[in-house]
Amino acid sequence: MSTIRLTMAQALIKYLAAQRIEFEGREVSLFEGVFAIFGHGNVAGLGEALYHAQEELPTLRAHNEQSMAHAAIAFAKANGRRRLMAATSSTGPGATNMVTAAGLAHANRLPILLLPGDTFATREPDPVLQQVEHFGDPAVTVNDCFRPVSRYFDRITRPEQLLTSLPQAIATLLDPEHCGPATLALPQDVQTFAHDYPESFFVPRVHRIRRPQPDPRELEAAIAALARAERPLIIAGGGVHYADACERLSEFARSHGVPVAETQAGKGALPDAHPWAVGAIGVTGSAAANHLAEEADLILAVGTRLQDFTTGSRALFERDDLTLVALNVGRFDSQKHHALALTGDALDGLAALDAGLSEWRAADAWQERAGGLKRDWAEVVERVTADAGRNLPTDAQVIGAVNRQAGEDGVVVCAAGGLPGELHKLWQCAGPGSYHVEYGYSCMGYEIAGGLGVKMARPEREVFVMVGDGSYLMHNSELATSVMLGHKLVVVVLDNRGFGCIHRLQQVTGGAGFNNLLADCRTVPEGAPKIDFAAHAGALGCQAESVSGIEALEAALTRARQASTTYVIALDTDPLPSTAEGGAWWEVAVPEISRREQVNVAYAGYRKAKQRQHR
Image 1 (cartoon, rainbow, N blue to C red):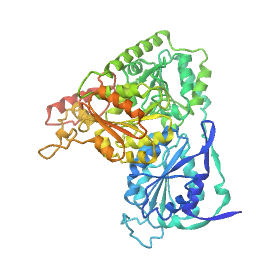
Image 2 (cartoon, one colour):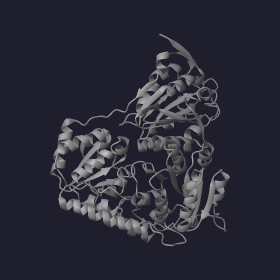
Image 3 (cartoon, rainbow, N blue to C red):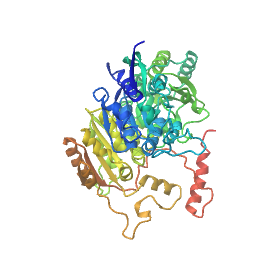
Image 4 (cartoon, rainbow, N blue to C red):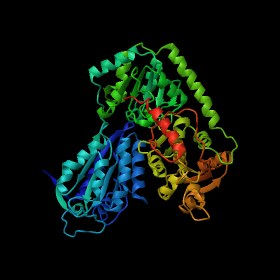
């Protein structure tokens, strides 16, 4: 057997560089590159290996470990989970900074290879700088924090362990059911240890995503249930995108006259102009989709994990007289909510359902009902997103302006707070790939880094990042990275002087304004400072300006589209309004006892609403 002597780090990088995948009709590298912030735990081992592999596997320098991992995750999502990135940090705070990103990837079923440095496997110099000692277990390090937020975890304590662990990590990253973060903790001494690796280990391999087929008995039961339905509704989730099933879904809806609602991850599966697209579902849903969900006799959930924002905290459509069919590649998700499970690939599953249903269509009255509700909702969207000439515009009005300027090639990127809810309701998608909102983990600070990852994946498209002042202040450093790497973003900063979304939730649950809007926080007598976001962005190398009102915003967006580098537009917005139309109940626990009467009133309403939940 021919061998090649390499350090563990060199072998790891050589293996990653050899991985290929079929993507959009061509064979390309599986890994776009490695985001890296070096420290004493990875610079001498992994850093040296990456230096010699820059042509095959580029290294990209970021400014924050969490943000660089977010960018890597967004890159994978924008590529339909078919192209990936890795992220490496030193041990200690660099590693734990990436734990939040791992949680985000895990919740959203998105792949990223995490390569945190670790302490010495030999333990000879212990305790080393940044080592957190566990008094009762010397084998535990901070990297064990990755275990609950990783789909695959291993600590490489011998260089030859790569031979079995690395292929398993890649398999997890590409598995349609178990996809999520894979973490290989790399002790800094083991990174430098040499081993005689088989040359066959580094032979280029072309990966192909498997498509698990539905069980014939489950398929038969699902077809029978659909054939009996007169008022069916489809809920499209992120799995529709990842299975490349958007066109198949469109054809299914047209052939059988079935309206299609979308989750946050599924939004854009159908363009909003599609005759059977009825908009967002659930807590942040359109009135059209939610009315249909309440009236449907069958719901076909495709590629969605059916979380509480989709189901209205299990109160929207989980009636005893409703049949729920769950087509999902993951058994864990297809079994939820007492559904009739159809475990399998979304693309092939829809094709099999279509073939088995033949000439079946939804009732004529149901099709007319869906069309009328769709038209009514379109009027709502046009009204609430129009420029009302307000000095402090609403989030909805800002969304309308950005949506109009985004055009057919635009991609909107957002995460957390009130904006995702308004975007889910109101953003008019041009089609697949035009909407990228992280809401499975609802992670503040994802927005700008996520926009960077999307632009890396789709450089031909204009990427519009919408971010509130709170998220901007949490994570903004990758603006400088976008300028440094030449990946232009258009960033709109909505400054409502605080955490406006949670302020509104605080009020709904009876609470007093407290610690959310800056006006309600403990400050010096002069109050909290007014942040000049444009000046800050300018200091990071961006083109930037502050504007007032929607008309000025639209003019600035025109300038931003013409710019060659990242362009930041800041404007003040009203923290109080949100779109009243549409939506569904969301369970947020209210105190059973309070000295505040508003809380007691809210608790009574909470108990009444809980009676609708399916048990």
